Length: 181
Image (cartoon, rainbow, N blue to C red; front, side, top):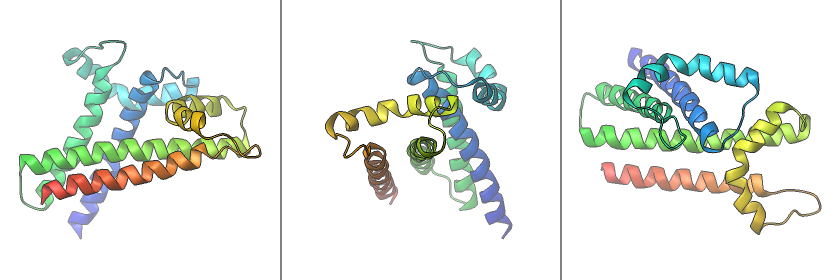
């Protein structure tokens, strides 16, 4: 009972922090400029680890690699905790669980951004946050929109991207778990 509560707490903390670190890194990749409130929140939640890591890994090629390293560290902490719970340590298991966590965080983060964009398109499409989310999703949706035209004014690219991300998540999970056994 206590182990499951501890696992839930550690999983929630590492997933939230890892997701925020990945969000900060993704904003750099897509060159999106978040609204001031979101930027302030991102820096508030991440600077405590990013600033010390920058001394070890400086920015390079226009990217702050310490944000990606911070997300990897969160995934490693989660994997180490999981191996501690099952009372069996293996570097292979830690590596695969770390990769699985990171890939799932990326995929679910992109799915979350797609859902947020869909909601904003109905509720308030001209919000500054809606424009930011649209910029975050552009690299994912642009290739689909080039291939698939709109049907009667409806854009199904978000739905297709969501479906493809779900398929990708299952494929990756099955590949990683099959290598663990």
